[in-house]
Image (cartoon, rainbow over all chains, first blue to last red; front, side, top):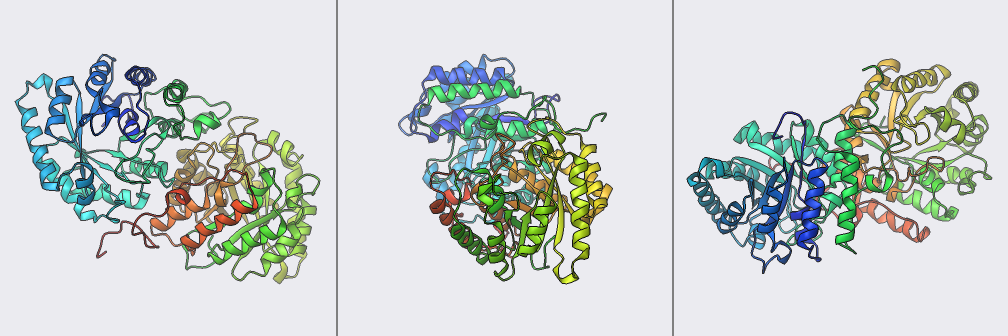
Length: 320
Length: 320
């Protein structure tokens, strides 16, 4: 949900986590800070700045605590961190994350490959984390989100039963998360499936508990899926600058939806994101310079904005 | 509108016209025929096979009459041809086109650049063509569609007033077309604008007179726009294999929406197109071989179909 009422859609930038963890280059800490600061200055309100996994597994994320501490200093920014388990959550909270997110893969095969844990084992971690958060002084308690990943299908298992996703969403809430998100980790989702699953999950856990949708553009349907989610009243969408991203354990699942194209779509539709599109497009240069040779996605950066484009809507008839 | 009731959405392939007219390479006639035959064999029901413009202007289209004649021999295929004026329409009809489409640019600046005609001059051509068609024996009369191009904005003029698009749609019907289409020639459209304009045009000319939507993926919003059009009950969508296409007079406006990704979206949503997705993906090889060095778009061809994908829907819960 948007943190304040002056925006319609919260665009949650996940590039510094989902993007960077799935490419070979390791971005220097200074470049990460410059990227995060530039996006915050462009008006992005929430950034997933890193993942608290052992540096032996993901050396790209070795500086997560330092990046969280830095991001905390940026005014108006919600600093989000991914945590795979209790130990990661403890460290992320100590570093000062405003919010932590833990993935629970609907595909148990993927869960074992990704977190090396069964569903029951992941949910036990969730309960430990929730108990830990409750023991903190109220002012220090982070938000706690559980994300059902591979919710629309798995590159290892194939189709994922919708009932399984609904069940895991319920179990996450029972285990103590504040909100649940759904992740199309593998880029398998289509708009009809997304609408159906959003309704099913909300019917089970309540409308306001389903916070956001995490989409990939693997088969080109990313923004169509984003539109379907918006139609269902979803107000938080994850995306990645330059479309960086994927899942190291889900081959072929490359590319979050592109922040630049998403914000252009939202802005041109007259939806308020709080983001200055021209400033956002300029941030891309930081990525290109810091990650030479890495593929960047996105159409709006190449095509540019429409002639005569003014922020806050396109094509609205004069006089309305 | 779908020609028969066994499909939900008519995917109208425009690559042999819109794609080929906007690239430098000239595709040999034999390759065009192979492409059209392969797509028809994959189940594509309508193909815009060429444009009847002087060969001095578009040498890529010099063989249009031969290609129309050939395409006529393919069973179950509606053969569509673009015509810029009366002379082109006469030739296309003589060649045997089942349907002709004439563009009328909402931006008069673009109209003058593209067809070298004002709105009034284009509409005079429409009236002449409609009169010519009426004089033909009933069995020989082609369908006649008028397309309002640059309907969502123009690279030369910038924003296009929605009232202008509605007015031109009405004038096209008055001048004698059977159906009107809306074209996002420049890739400026967004889903909110598209929904609004579809409703406005239908309110003016009647629901069934607005036949199809022609979209470009210039800023990555192509499939989101397609979804918005489907939500409004549009049942014909233009697309181009490999995303070939654009407008030679609208710089930067490259790339129709990609047939492969569009059909994957529709099929995975459980919408019937009559198209065999695996066969369609195989057609791409003809393009790659016949157009070496030309850029192809599309995500589904690279990523492949989801693991365990079966035609006719993805993610539908078991037992429903």
